[in-house]
Image (cartoon, rainbow over all chains, first blue to last red; front, side, top):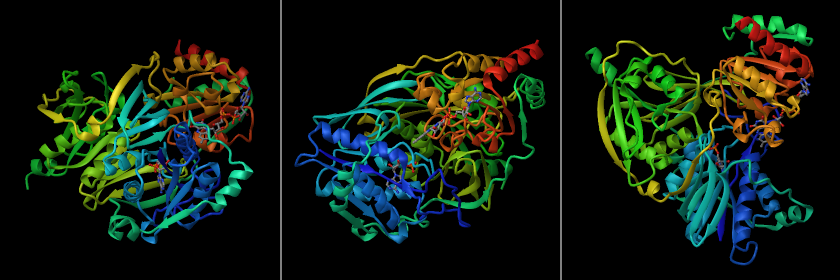
Amino acid sequence: MRVVVCVKHVPDIQQPRSLRADGLLVRGGDDDTLNELDEDAVEAGLRTAEAAGFPAEGHDVTVLTVGPSAAVESLRRGLAMGASTAVHVHDDAVAGSDAIATARVLAAAVAKLHAEQPVDVVVAGMAALDGLTSLVPAALAELLGWPQLTLADRIEVADGVVSVRRETSTDVEELTAPTPAVLSVTDQAFRARFPNFKGIMAARKKPVTTWTLSDLDLAGTAVGAAGSATRVVNAAERPERPDRVLVTGDAETVPALVDYLSQKGFV
Amino acid sequence: MSEQDDRTRGAVAVLVDHLDGVVKPTARELLTLARGLDRQVHAVWVRAEGGPAAPTAELAAHGADIVHDVEVTGADAQLTASVVDALQTVLAAVDTVGLLLVPSTFEGREVAARLAVRTGAGVVTGASGVTFEDGRWSAHKTVLAGAWDTACAVTGPLAVVAVAPHAVQALAQDGVAEPSVVRHTAAASSAARAVTVVSRTRRPTSERPPLAEAEVVVVGGRGVEGDFSGVEELADVLGGAVGATRVATDEGWIGHEAQVGQTGVTISPRLYLGLGVSGAVHHKGGMAASATVVAVNSDPDAPIFEFADYGVVGDLTEVLPALTAELRRRKG
Ligand SMILES: Cc1cc2nc3c(=O)[nH]c(=O)nc-3n(C[C@H](O)[C@H](O)[C@H](O)COP(=O)(O)OP(=O)(O)OC[C@H]3O[C@@H](n4cnc5c(N)ncnc54)[C@H](O)[C@@H]3O)c2cc1C
Ligand SMILES: Nc1ncnc2c1ncn2[C@@H]1O[C@H](COP(=O)(O)O)[C@@H](O)[C@H]1O
């Protein structure tokens, strides 16, 4: 079984984050980290491969990222959790890609991996906590022409068929599709394992392959700002909410609160 | 160029979200938003073969000039790829559409992503509004857990904007002419046909409005200490929905579908009331766009007070019952 897990290196959401004058997110801080939701994707990928015999010979879990040089740290984290190989697509032309352009790079990388050794499933997280678009997994499926099974909370692969369970806003669904397929997972079902010391040490020795756009036969115009059909034209820090009120007390505070709700038209 | 030509050029299409033929409140908002742009408005209704036909009068009252009623054949009509097939069929028939509005749900965003790949469209998600400037569509959205406001322009031939709930107030107009209705059949693509729906079970629905669409959301956090009955009572007095933090859903005090936040439901109600909620960044990311934020928390240093419009530093066990009682009294 071959599993590819897409992981993104993002600014730590617990730290102040900001946008540059050109509207792009400030990246490259010391606290930048593996997108938390992609830890669940790595976990899901590992469990899926383990069910087929990974880490025995012939099975592989590859972590894949598209990002700046520091993104290799997120790959190391995935390797420390147990992934066997890592691929880093790193090319200055990729900076400033929107979600669809990013998916284009990921698709080219997955296609190259697939040509080398067939991939059974690609697993992504439910969202990257920087842009929070949740566009990439579906775009990736469309680009690869592989079936899309997103927001899974249970995954089984057997005899060339992937089965997932997922919850939509209204339904619980069980879907199946032939492999290879593109999956994303929620943060509900795949609580990520914590890398142990042995894993962290082993990760240092595992291979990380670096590809540029030319390795992927992608033109610079297909990615970055040139390959993105969206552009941030204005970005401003939001002012604090004006006229904020803070009162202290218990039941005696209630009449004034109800007056406030009433003024706003909620009563 | 006549006024009619101007309205037609760069028409707006709206993907109408519905559940078994019942139009979702957010779809009425999207149509209202589209009507306000003063373009020809195409409503796209996607259904299974023999599924419920488009409620044309309701769609017209909210802004549709033309209703496209699309039956998907050959695959499950609710699959993302099927919806994209249906939209592509309409876009092929109406080549004037410059802006497509979809709901900013997970499903709506996935539809946007696939359509963008197929058509070269630019996608903006979680938008609170759209404008037409310098010959292109631009969408407004709040990012980084409510800390920044941005405008994002679409440079591609088609703008697909996933709109957050409550971007505008849905408004039906009286005396609107019957829209013209165009029927289409969309043959599902191989992407849709590849997926088999083995089972689909409707989750039990509550009497309360759905979380994502509710005008008022009352959220309980760890501070409710296991008992959501007070939160539910207050929600009912205000006609709102009940939400929860991840702590409350992980503890099993309430179902996971009630989780508000970055990895739960993203909400932007007119009123958010947080009870015993600390305001962690994961939570804030899913509610920062709420119009009015009210918080009750016993800890004066709780982060939620940094962005609440009205905060009460107090004990829930005292404040909550008094608040519900006072609201009941004033409502008579
Ligand atoms: C990957 C990831 C994703 C996450 N996604 C989400 C998400 O989508 N949504 C989400 O909500 N969380 C999410 N979380 C969790 C989030 O980080 C916080 O842990 C959570 O939001 C805190 O919930 P809380 O406010 O109920 O609990 P706490 O942070 O423990 O706060 C409880 C508050 O209640 C107050 N309180 C206690 N007793 C009383 C009383 N008697 N009267 C008044 N006030 C009282 C306390 O002062 C405190 O401020 C996520 C975490 C991770 C790692
Ligand atoms: N630059 C990237 N490199 C690798 N994976 C990514 C990248 N961007 C997004 N992804 C994957 O796509 C998922 C959804 O991201 P997004 O659509 O950006 O919210 C993430 O959880 C990742 O699994």
